[in-house]
Image (tube, rainbow, N blue to C red; front, side, top):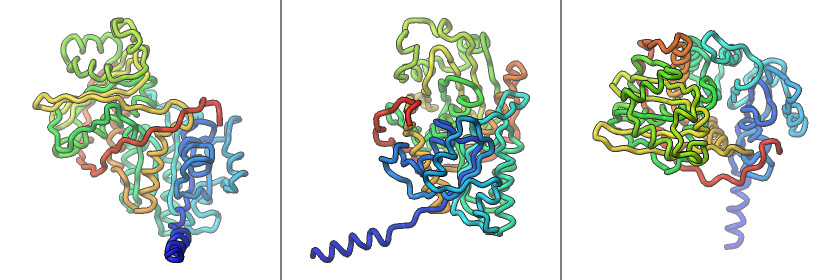
Length: 409
């Protein structure tokens, strides 16, 4: 019997699935950047200290579009023997002329890039993905690609990226870490629910964090009856227009306060009796009207809120609310579950969640920032008439390890 278990143990070791070989294409790689908290997990384990669980992914090549003085990619590449190439093509072929990796992590977030007319940073996602797809065409081979956060800063480029991946039959995933976060309480929209309205609260900048809030909302509403049906129009209100919208009942104030009550550490939780209008000097509100009648409202309330919360109600009046919690300290463990989602795709060849979610949120952010730039003008979105469904189900992650100060390794 001992020999039997010894054979099983030896088989478990020898028969272990080899790691997938991953190329990382990033804008900049510095401490606590998205490249660090995503790509470094392949080197430093999920706890970013070489002591945690290691994803079954091996970083075999790296491309950095910019190299700031604070760059850490060279340090880690030297320590772990990862070659850094000067072109995306070399990064995917390892200089062989043939596709030599099993997957691509495209992390175009952070770095010094210009903003477009509506204030959205023009990260070079189209340029970098264009270089990737040219390798696919040249070699006649493809591998799965994950694009961090939105697909592009504008609808045309986001649609091009999505459609190019579909044309080449490239398994594509994208998006924010928010859908995989801890939720307190751990609730989700019931699949097939008849949603009437959803109200979310957010903070920080509209392009960077407003995008995260849109992903939070979209991962919930895509579960409604019929799945995603498309969006008719959007609007971004600012300043006093937000308070007027609240006073006139444009959105359900009860849902707003249900979302606020779920927050754990925001200023409003420490000053619950102080009027919201005193805490927030310049509110912004995204208004989204879906084609099936659902309405979504995302309020950015800097001064009162530094977390994400959301509440929704059905046509029957049932109401739920929760907060989406991030670990705001290293190792930023929520990124672990984003990486785990990509790992699953790299092994199965099937996206863990639909890229159409991020196509939608990329387009929404673009249109909403255009509205804000035009003083709250309603922006029709007839082009967002596409439908999709998602089979992905959220699961509460296990408790994170204790956080370390962000300035520590």
